Image: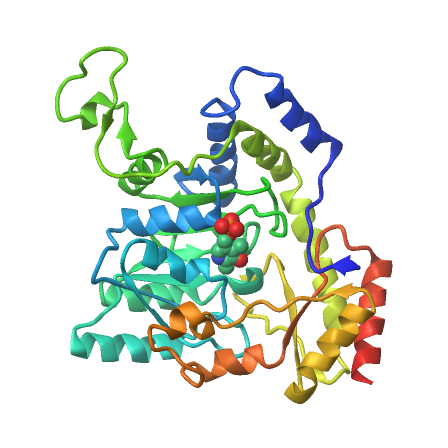
Length: 382
Ligand SMILES: *Cc1c(COP(=O)(O)O)cnc(C)c1O
């Protein structure tokens, strides 16, 4: 089976992890800060907080922005459930804004209309999670402008998008958001096995997220309620979690960062080749926004004939092509339907779901394998 995505581990990656295992510190040592510094400087953010998953990063990002019970978070339905669940961890409510059918990202026009309506009834969200679906940035300048008008905070869920650019600058620099989150799950662009990171330019948000990833504890005397009792002293200032990344994970991530640009270059070449090879088939290729240069985490085709969706998907799997579907609209999950979301609520997302297939795309995919994928798609559609 040719997988839709997978990690690429080099001998250097293995040596880096092994060196940590032979060292004194397996956790809370020097490598996590070095990995944070490497990612922050690559994407142009002032602060980075490494954690054990992007889901944890989304959780502490929401907490740092003050999201709590009775608050509201909005995201788009075509995403992994974590983009919405982060609100539920904080006791907040979730609502959705439909996608734009070309980009699969939150539709700025729908967002503008929904924000105006929400402002009129006094039920604005506290936070919008803007997802970089497949690695392509949403229209962040417009989204930031709309959010600022209404006093809404923004988290970019860029789990797919480390290495991508928007308006000529790296995704993750937080020019249009309060916090940006990356995932390092093995199918994503670079990996730490499990892992994630929150980037921000706000020192206060960074400090709060650092505390929240480690039990709400500080060792900084300036933050304590009274002078330290002694050199052993720490204080728990609020309720936090253990969301720390290990030194082995950070060593793997730091080593993978050396190949980020090469991974992105290969993914972009494969995406261009798919665009050319699939041009004449009965499907729509992913829409490209000229201001966004995608990291191409996913290449999603949409079938012209939705009635053949399942049979084409099954034929591709039978042909050894590890296709997948990203994502089932979050509002249709039983957990969210129980909050009264229902089919028909977000038509563009549901139409996407009726046609979408993620085809193999990763930096280790060979030209020959890509040829097999294209042949299998042509045959399945014939
Ligand atoms: C993978 C992913 C997450 C969660 O990442 P983890 O690191 O597995 O917690 C969140 N949002 C999106 C859009 C993702 O693709």
